[in-house]
Image (cartoon, rainbow, N blue to C red; front, side, top):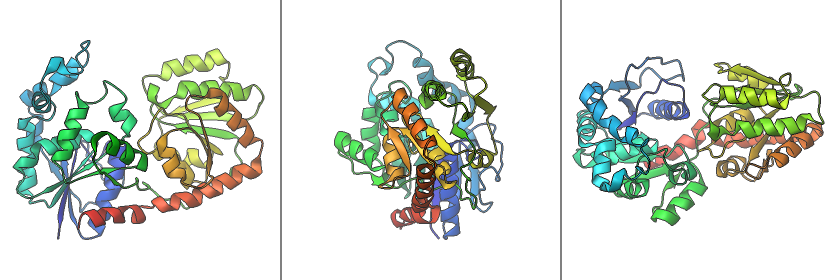
Length: 391
């Protein structure tokens, strides 16, 4: 029986990394692999039910990782991000940066557990965990390392200040010290190949759940969901809905989520005079109810590694209107299951909303097409690719 480890802060918190990592862990476990989560987070609330993790998947807590002195040292680079012009740590060498971000102390702790468990493979979901494994790799007895990119190229290499310092050099180091790097889209593969000359493996995200119900597409509700942060573009969504609402008096917008931009969105809603047309129920553990009570899903993110809420909406038969981000093309494929409008084009978004709501036949056709299209991302189909690279 082959042994696989997945390095993660915790599989039990709410997040896309946790969800898809659980899907993969369960699939491998069901297909004869001995699977362990190598967990380094603090104050972990264990809840196998949050994403349905099989209880036969091991939870290995690396408690040494969180000793006070180590946490202080690890915090330094994040605090330096607040200092002007410090993105490259004032000319610090790549090795110095790697030591601070995923240092030798951390590498020793990770290697101890990887070797004690006698793992055949260890997977690092998210680039930060992939870098940690690359730094520790030389200390592994025999485990092969697979990196797993969960956000997109734009997030990592075109959005300064949100990832580790000097990411280009760190990525070159990482690619030289792992056995395989998995990305979610062909677009990410092509961009990484062009920039780094590295031929990544494309494995789409698996659906994180399947539903035997679909929306009737009769409710006059748009739906959008996500954390209330600038990346999600909900300010532009509210502007587009305001324009749409100038000529429509029935449809409402349901905006599900929480986050630091909540007050700003509430002010925008008031300023636009659409208080009676926008519903903000907060964060929800019952997203199924919202999907079933909506007829169109709206995506206004600046970038998304995959677009999990879009995939979920399509699972429930909702047509999608989205800004033009690469992952939407990967999800839609050649199928007409939504409308993609130019990035940040609020006028085009509002126009698409009007066109779709005024054409019930097209709305239903797009929703049906999306429901069929999303079947190709079923976990049993997608995760077979993982079996191929773990042989």
